[in-house]
Length: 126
Image 1: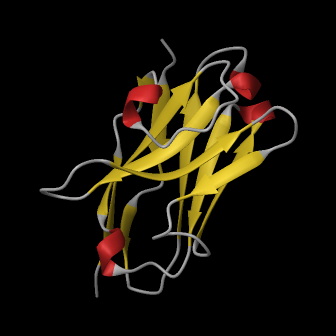
Image 2 (image 1 turned 45 degrees about the vertical axis):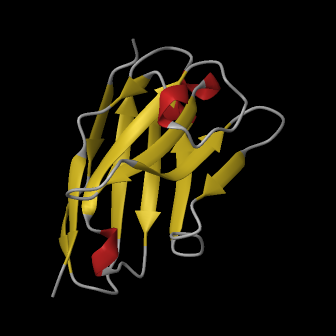
Protein backbone atom coordinates (compact mmCIF):
# COMPACT_ATOMS: atom_id res chain seq x y z
CA UNK A 1 0.00 0.00 0.00
CA UNK A 2 1.35 3.37 -1.01
CA UNK A 3 1.23 6.06 1.68
CA UNK A 4 0.12 9.49 0.46
CA UNK A 5 0.19 12.76 2.41
CA UNK A 6 -1.38 15.91 1.01
CA UNK A 7 -0.59 19.47 2.07
CA UNK A 8 -1.14 23.01 0.88
CA UNK A 9 -4.86 23.48 1.33
CA UNK A 10 -6.40 26.55 2.92
CA UNK A 11 -8.67 29.55 2.52
CA UNK A 12 -8.24 31.72 -0.57
CA UNK A 13 -10.25 34.50 -2.18
CA UNK A 14 -11.91 34.04 -5.57
CA UNK A 15 -9.36 34.55 -8.31
CA UNK A 16 -6.52 33.48 -6.05
CA UNK A 17 -4.09 30.57 -6.30
CA UNK A 18 -3.01 27.60 -4.22
CA UNK A 19 -0.55 24.78 -4.77
CA UNK A 20 -1.30 21.38 -3.33
CA UNK A 21 1.43 18.82 -2.74
CA UNK A 22 1.21 15.08 -2.28
CA UNK A 23 4.19 13.13 -0.97
CA UNK A 24 4.21 9.42 -1.75
CA UNK A 25 6.05 6.48 -0.24
CA UNK A 26 7.80 3.82 -2.26
CA UNK A 27 10.87 3.37 -4.41
CA UNK A 28 9.09 3.19 -7.76
CA UNK A 29 7.19 6.48 -7.62
CA UNK A 30 8.10 7.29 -11.22
CA UNK A 31 5.88 4.41 -12.36
CA UNK A 32 2.84 5.48 -10.34
CA UNK A 33 -0.24 6.79 -12.07
CA UNK A 34 -1.08 9.81 -9.91
CA UNK A 35 -4.35 11.67 -9.68
CA UNK A 36 -6.17 14.41 -7.84
CA UNK A 37 -9.84 14.15 -6.93
CA UNK A 38 -12.12 16.41 -4.93
CA UNK A 39 -15.29 16.08 -2.93
CA UNK A 40 -17.52 19.01 -2.13
CA UNK A 41 -19.90 18.85 0.80
CA UNK A 42 -22.91 16.72 -0.06
CA UNK A 43 -21.51 15.66 -3.44
CA UNK A 44 -19.71 12.64 -4.82
CA UNK A 45 -15.96 12.56 -5.19
CA UNK A 46 -14.93 13.63 -8.69
CA UNK A 47 -11.88 13.47 -10.91
CA UNK A 48 -9.77 16.62 -11.19
CA UNK A 49 -6.47 15.73 -12.87
CA UNK A 50 -4.07 12.86 -13.54
CA UNK A 51 -0.46 12.48 -14.60
CA UNK A 52 1.14 9.38 -16.05
CA UNK A 53 4.76 8.62 -16.89
CA UNK A 54 5.95 6.30 -19.65
CA UNK A 55 6.28 7.07 -23.34
CA UNK A 56 6.48 10.71 -22.28
CA UNK A 57 4.59 12.54 -19.60
CA UNK A 58 0.82 12.70 -20.08
CA UNK A 59 -1.63 14.89 -18.20
CA UNK A 60 -5.42 14.85 -18.09
CA UNK A 61 -7.93 17.32 -16.65
CA UNK A 62 -11.59 17.58 -15.89
CA UNK A 63 -13.30 20.12 -18.14
CA UNK A 64 -14.19 22.22 -15.10
CA UNK A 65 -10.52 22.90 -14.27
CA UNK A 66 -8.89 22.81 -17.71
CA UNK A 67 -6.83 25.96 -18.29
CA UNK A 68 -6.81 26.86 -14.60
CA UNK A 69 -5.19 23.87 -12.86
CA UNK A 70 -1.86 22.23 -13.65
CA UNK A 71 -0.71 18.84 -12.41
CA UNK A 72 2.99 18.07 -12.26
CA UNK A 73 5.36 15.66 -10.57
CA UNK A 74 8.91 15.60 -9.24
CA UNK A 75 10.06 12.00 -9.25
CA UNK A 76 13.24 12.90 -7.32
CA UNK A 77 11.03 14.02 -4.42
CA UNK A 78 8.27 11.41 -4.78
CA UNK A 79 5.83 14.29 -4.98
CA UNK A 80 2.94 15.32 -7.21
CA UNK A 81 1.60 18.86 -7.30
CA UNK A 82 -1.63 20.56 -8.25
CA UNK A 83 -1.24 24.25 -9.08
CA UNK A 84 -4.65 25.88 -8.89
CA UNK A 85 -5.12 29.35 -10.39
CA UNK A 86 -8.17 31.55 -10.93
CA UNK A 87 -9.95 29.74 -8.15
CA UNK A 88 -13.73 29.91 -7.94
CA UNK A 89 -16.12 29.31 -5.04
CA UNK A 90 -17.24 26.12 -6.77
CA UNK A 91 -13.69 24.76 -6.40
CA UNK A 92 -14.30 24.54 -2.65
CA UNK A 93 -13.86 20.90 -1.63
CA UNK A 94 -11.64 18.40 0.11
CA UNK A 95 -8.90 17.49 -2.36
CA UNK A 96 -7.51 13.96 -2.38
CA UNK A 97 -4.37 12.56 -3.91
CA UNK A 98 -4.55 9.05 -5.35
CA UNK A 99 -2.09 6.57 -6.82
CA UNK A 100 -1.83 3.33 -8.71
CA UNK A 101 1.58 1.73 -9.15
CA UNK A 102 2.85 0.58 -12.50
CA UNK A 103 -0.05 1.81 -14.62
CA UNK A 104 0.27 3.78 -17.83
CA UNK A 105 -3.44 3.69 -18.67
CA UNK A 106 -5.52 6.79 -18.07
CA UNK A 107 -8.65 6.44 -16.01
CA UNK A 108 -10.73 9.12 -14.25
CA UNK A 109 -12.50 6.47 -12.21
CA UNK A 110 -12.06 6.28 -8.44
CA UNK A 111 -12.08 2.49 -8.50
CA UNK A 112 -8.96 2.45 -10.69
CA UNK A 113 -6.82 4.09 -8.01
CA UNK A 114 -5.43 1.84 -5.27
CA UNK A 115 -4.19 4.27 -2.64
CA UNK A 116 -5.60 7.50 -1.25
CA UNK A 117 -4.42 10.32 0.95
CA UNK A 118 -6.36 11.75 3.86
CA UNK A 119 -7.41 14.87 1.96
CA UNK A 120 -6.79 18.59 2.33
CA UNK A 121 -9.49 21.25 2.53
CA UNK A 122 -9.59 24.03 -0.05
CA UNK A 123 -12.05 26.85 0.59
CA UNK A 124 -12.57 29.63 -1.94
CA UNK A 125 -14.48 32.48 -0.38
CA UNK A 126 -14.42 36.23 -0.06
